[in-house]
Image (tube, rainbow, N blue to C red; front, top):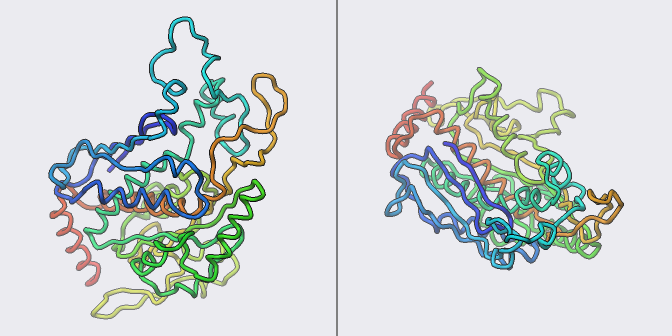
Length: 393
């Protein structure tokens, strides 16, 4: 499976094309729209989420609610486009008009954004050409693609969930949700304002977001993604670019504003002896091979172990501040405070939704690489046979 996304933040629409999905997989717009709505939620979101009510249109690759095996095209219209048609229009400027007369040009790069370096790389003097594509608005389509991947995984008995474990220095207590299944976690976080599973940490996270907003500042945090039901042996140890750890870490780090990733105990392992890190192996006739602990986060030697995959990512505070940082005008070279675009004081809850979907996409891709996946029924049979094989190994 492979995919591409296209579109600008204030352009007419966002588009994704997915190739490689098996035929006969159930897929409807409703399956995707619910996830798009979750991406727009969470305490700390800004006014853009009130303007856009993201709804997907499936325009190819699906007939009567089932995939055809041909490329699937997904489109989300930008409702705000009507206010930007002259600024972001595709057609050439009218004869005699001056490019400098186009409104909302940007020559003052924002620290922490792609503005300055992107302008240097592609030769843009109007930095709007950079920020329109580098915007996190693009993650709308990453979630749409991930929603398709999640539907694929569900049909194979693989389930995902993501939740927030830290915002603005406020951390959850893992004991408050230890032992919960992905479904139980989802039931909790879907009614929580910050997508957090710890009821005691929730109000403190909300306060941290509100304090950052009152100060014209922003707050970052940590999100955790869990994947249950993935069979062992997905990925490979034989070549560096086939290791599942690397693929998942790369997917997490591809999300806007993410600056760190860890799997299982992650960086805590540096403080611990090996006897407290590795997961001992057991076997019984009912389960086959299993582990009583999951400190390695469901991955060993570049492959899934059969235990739940547990991966976390850290999101830096959004760099667009209403108390802006200093910058330099690229035209005059004079110091200025950076340009302000619409922004959120905190997007960590929304980022947890994005993280879940990019991880789901990567797991789905890896499974399609491992097994023949022309049809959904054929793939289910292969997976079932493989699960029985590893149980009896």
